[in-house]
Image 1 (cartoon, rainbow, N blue to C red):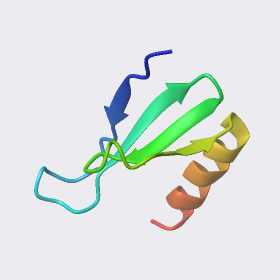
Image 2: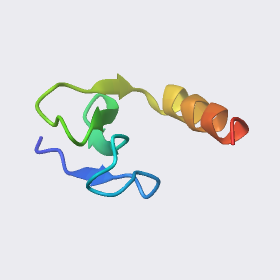
Image 3: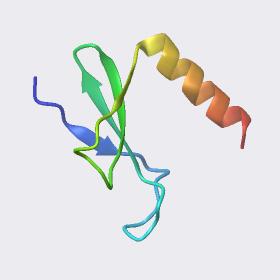
Length: 60
């Protein structure tokens, strides 16, 4: 499976240190640092991803 990574709309510009990409994986949802695409990724299932997003929204 060839993963297509998508940069988060909340990530900063090219000069920003905080850049996140998401990708649909066979085993769930991948989250990685767009500035280090070969550095690995975190894999979350749908429930874990929903919990992460919910917690991030609470912290705004």
